[in-house]
Length: 499
Ligand code: 4AD
Ligand code: MG
Image (cartoon, rainbow, N blue to C red):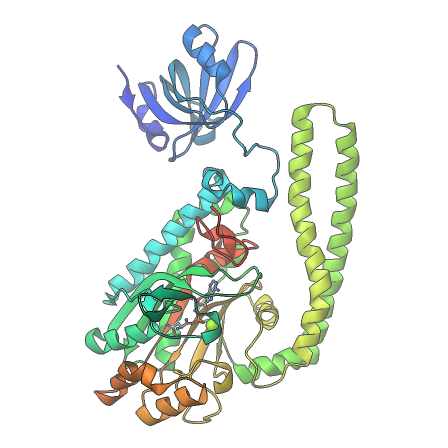
């Protein structure tokens, strides 16, 4: 008799006979023995099939990667095994025999992997990222639920722009024009007048004609909105929120972070309070001599690192020409693939840092911060950085003007450290009817299109505000990834809709 078990519970079955169900993720044969690596969604386990167990041995000898199997055998403790336990197989059943699984242990380019995303999700790296995503989303919900925020689902089909008109996705909606939601914010503002504290959490869409590492056309955003809240209250809420998110991932996913090669120190070092800068401070910093010297130093370091990486690559190439054994070649090729990625990064730095510096030093007051400006500010800080009080001309119509200086708005962007840049955008909202109406007109929009939104300023208007956090950008930072596309199961970008 055997019990059905999953790999994550093997520790409770040492010495017993169990049946696992899963997929063959690797195989090694050594004459009279076959080592199957089986994954079942909860972990990895080495399953040992000896020639003496004839039927199982014959099956195992035929099995290719990603074939689906039932494996029955005795659970043995083995410190050297992944997960600490292995199975001495007595019965092996192949459910479906896979042949020529396209993703091999050899390195593949990211385009190839993205085109096989439906299969790639099974590999350890995407699996680790998706588990961290799960934790993050749970932490997001817990945070707001525990603080009495009422979840309000906002519509995906909308009539107009919530953010930038240039990035609207039109949809044919019977006889009318409609667009996919860029944000739930305007609807949330009405909900917060009912419940005081609300949040929405769903997919949002932006027709970003951009191929940067930070942009998706479909991404998930969580947006809290609070009545009787001013900018300072939002800053406090955002700090506690980010803190809770990072803490949850560190608590539940340190193994996954390590598997991704994420250096945990920068995450562990994050401290309250976060840095606060006004837009004016940022402009001064971008134009400063100190910034110039710092970027020049970064450039020197990047150039040295690139030259060292080139040298290492040449060395690996020569080792590869001499390597005879297939496993040695695979190992070298895997090393070279990682190094190639590092090289691309370093080349990019060497090429971009001078451009970024030039843009920074000639930055003009009034412009929105560009990705490169954010990167420079965020690279110089160990903690997340709030940037507040942007020029009204650079921001959306709904942001409240500062009473001290009507040229700027009471907004905040949060830049993630290590160069990751903006993960939160938010503001106090304009609560005065006339001022809001003029702001709509000034941005070239039609007040008629916003008449229901303007009602909120006609019937019991109060100071209020909120922010939006992009899940994928936040994950990119927490996981230490280079590109946002790996943080969602099926990314949508300007260049990709498949699979
Ligand atoms: O700064 P954004 O545009 O703010 C809003 O949409 C507000 N209505 C939110 C609010 O106040 N309720 O977007 C918020 C966040 C960004 O900081 C970023 O993390 C993410 O959404 N984001 C994107 N993520 C991936 N790809 C894109 N194209 C993104 N655009 C914004
Ligand atoms: Mg923004």
